[in-house]
Length: 319
Image 1 (cartoon, helix red, strand yellow):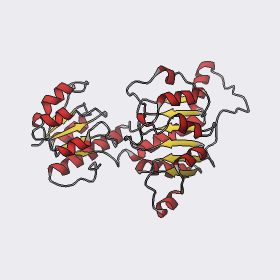
Image 2 (cartoon, one colour):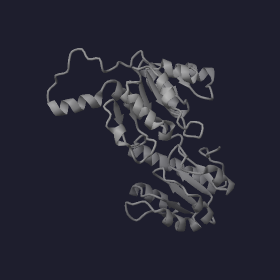
Image 3 (cartoon, helix red, strand yellow):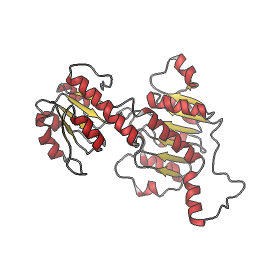
Image 4 (spheres, helix red, strand yellow):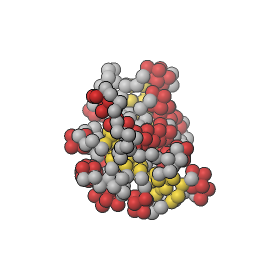
């Protein structure tokens, strides 16, 4: 029976299914295995199942005599040195399909919550216990007919575009790899160069992977290109945004507001950011439904299974 080491605990229903097929090693309690524990446990493992975007150490790969594949329960893989793994003949698989709709839903939820001031109204009402808002209030925005600028139009970006189309929004996008004309037409998307998109969007939503090229893609200069009335949404990766520049942009009203699920220095969120009033923050919950997380594990395991059977999985990470 092939041995899989999972760095984090999973629900019993998932464990039961995996133990039918694999010799599964998981933490006995609620705490994750430490790096030192993983270093020992992977010595005779065939696969590693990585949850919670845990950093996969190159030393684990060096110490694993039989390791063939790492399953990352996420679509991003910046927590793994994929090039090093490939050099050592260790495959990396991820979960590109199962994160799509749930992450897109959160992006749209944050967009609507920010544009309609949901958190602000909740806080005001919970304190006053009276429905006493002004009849005219210049703080919230109708999204119908507004322009959503999507930066990065892969699976999640396309899913966001489809949902925005249903809300009656105009959708424009930038991606280094332009979509086929038929895909643009089907999703009602218009391609724009990056800087033009920033200047045009009423809401800007990031869906790019984190790479050396996208590090601090959003910075002092790029925030300054946005409309002062615009909102910024990030459900991708934190380091794509220069957090210090975002804080200044929000403080100085360079942009109207932001809603974030990811942060530059996770798991920490700076107090200066959290204290801002024109901001919604949630703790990296883009895929946090039991249904989605269970499906993500299944997708990662399908890739692990394929590699161990000598097949090329659909979710193989290629760089």
